[in-house]
Length: 192
Image (cartoon, rainbow, N blue to C red; front, side):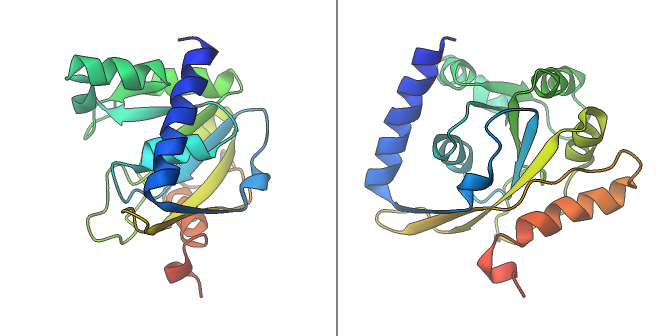
């Protein structure tokens, strides 16, 4: 889809969210303007992907569960702004290839490394996919912590930490913990 369509949807969604809830952002000046970048966020709500995308001043691509593409008009809409389907619960080679293509083309990819929303709000363990992509491409990883509540005139907070890289030789479980620690450091209730 063309850039004008992406930015039209971007501004429409941004205005709607701004009218609905109070949005606080912290550290968004840390986001690199160019180069391969994987944004990693905790996942509280279905609103997280569009909200995060419209807070960024850079076009982003993101995985969305394949079920969201089954209602064709909605699937077309999210695909037109950078979403691509992923089958959860097993390795999805097509989604992995698309993610590698995005990162190898020095673009930005948004991932929720927990793999699904947390009903309790507690952080879950990162899945191995985010680690694989970061180690395979050498991209910068940018943690974003989401806290607060979505709701009419309620406050939702997005806090961005410093970019980091995952060394290719770092053990997978160590890297998974590192990703979630960096996200947790951006969430007030997880800070010590």
